[in-house]
Length: 247
Image 1 (spheres, rainbow, N blue to C red):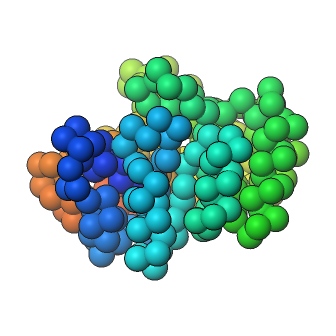
Image 2 (image 1 turned 90 degrees about the vertical axis):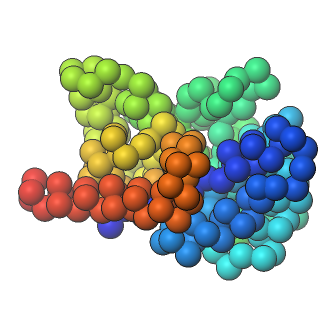
């Protein structure tokens, strides 16, 4: 069964709009776990636009959960990860001017640098995932880096109009997921997923985990964070019926 890991960055986005101490990402994370999420994701950006260093420290020390830290492969972030010891690091591309992560990490184009970061983090006992687009070149470079996990960027799938364009993006996710698993990689996915588009991705054979944040936190404004997490889990679990029907 595909699992849900909730990204609570945008709880911090609301807090930082007023530079106060609420809403609290730690409390949001606790509620997500109580509602059935299996882990928490946070992205500590260079510009600290939402999640702050103290959020990472508090979530790491006060919650007994799988913590996935998204970060750029910089010396500063590697040092922070080695100090705070999240269960997993997901290396992502990062640009100051972007609103949100715009695409996958170019592992193939900076393979030596990424491989060094992977080796350093895994050598310290921290699992490493690489956030990549679903294409063969990036999958194979990720396998060569020594990382054990990848996370497919699903933004192109989510942004494509329903019909042939979206079907083509889903086909790429299915194809490259099978390719990655054949190379020994565990496959996760995320970015732009919501209850309207998540089931086909959750139904991909071997899909381990989905990281979902923006749509879930937006929905939580309307129905509460527990309800939003429970609703998303139900949408993901509907993919089990989809898989059974295809078997």
